[in-house]
Image 1 (cartoon, helix red, strand yellow):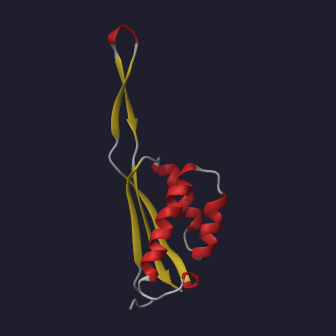
Image 2 (tube, helix red, strand yellow; image 1 turned 90 degrees about the vertical axis):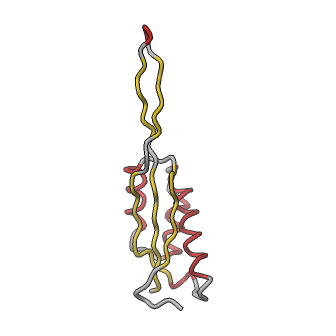
Image 3 (tube, helix red, strand yellow; image 1 turned 90 degrees about the horizontal axis):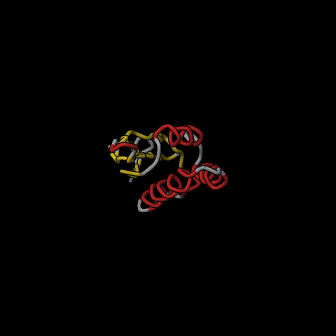
Length: 114
């Protein structure tokens, strides 16, 4: 069994999302109840919401293995770290090339019991 001080975490790594845009959404759901956060993510119009929702569902299902109900869950921590940047090149005039850096991020969500 999990005590109230422990938490369950779920991670999403190497996601093709911007870290700044993802953090903006994670700050909205931090400290909220599980069901409330799922509703917020359902109706926000941003691309990272769909992926964050999947990670949050995964964390909730991980906690169900310990016989806890989802109504008692609170999002203890939610943060995004930078991942490696994918480096691509855009051809330009006269044989030049401009570098394009495509960001990736790692999302970690920790749930605890109320």
